[in-house]
Amino acid sequence: MSTLFVSHPSSLDHDTGPSHPERPERMRAIRAAMADPRFDALVRDDAPWGESKVITRVHPTSYFNAIEEAAPKDGTVALDHGDTVMSPGTWATLMHAVGGTTHAVDCVMNGSASNAFVAMRPPGHHAELSTPMGFCFFNTAAIAARHAQMLHGAKRVAIVDFDVHHGNGTQAIFWSDPSVLYASTHQMPLFPGSGAVSERGAHDTIVNAPLRSGDAGEQFRDAMQSRILPRLESFAPDLIVISAGFDAHWRDPLGSVELVEDDYAWITEELMEIARKYSGGRIVSLLEGGYDLEGLAKSTAAHVGTLMGA
Image 1 (cartoon, rainbow, N blue to C red):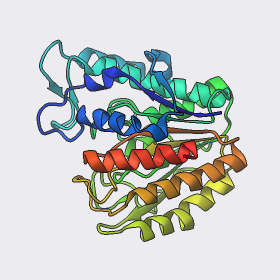
Image 2: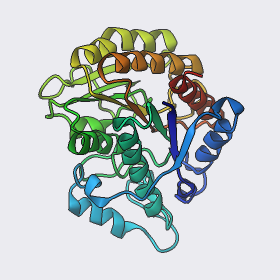
Image 3: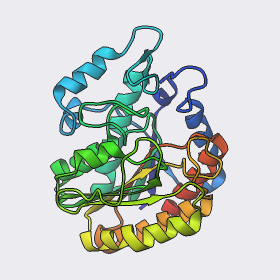
């Protein structure tokens, strides 16, 4: 089996305005990286249009309707102090991001792909049940987990988040759910301010391993090896979902953790090893942050190349 790469041209149509870090050029940088011959073996699918019912398994219907109705006919509208911006093309981007997520889960869970990477924007892990924030509208990692459970019978899903920002939305959604493990490395203090070690969830299924400004690969690997990977082993997930944020790269302007491409390759291999032991190798990786275009492209290439075994 092969690695599935899912994207869609609509990801270029979410216009956040000049100088916004979450911009269409992110997708162009990833597509240019994936054009390298080493990625010729990727199976590439366009993301289908998402179904509202997979979103409302996570977010209330009233919230889904409010986001759809907020989409402007022209210009832009800010939903979160200027950070979370909608343009006329945003709704299609969001629905293809959701559709790409569930398509990747379907392919991995039914065995037609060994693992998958979904290259869509905007990110999702800051979106709470009824609150858009931090560039995020719908929590695609949560949607992936619920879809795997509801449609494919997964009993335990682990979400591993290595974005430089803590996934407050994912943590909040699964705080009281023993069937989903949420584990995160992230910089603290930094937006959104959550993610302390003491935040463990109602069933000890929240695992936070915060990093400090200036921490690099040594501290990142220690956090993974000492806190997150052992908890993944004991949880024995049926599927691993990765919130793959590449803004902990040393070049990124929105954080000050000093990771390099080899760190992303290393954690990808570590997660693949656990997936081979407990979940038949099943991994669905979803793009989150990463705002320096060179750092994003190189880190994505390291991550996807490792998923491929390339």
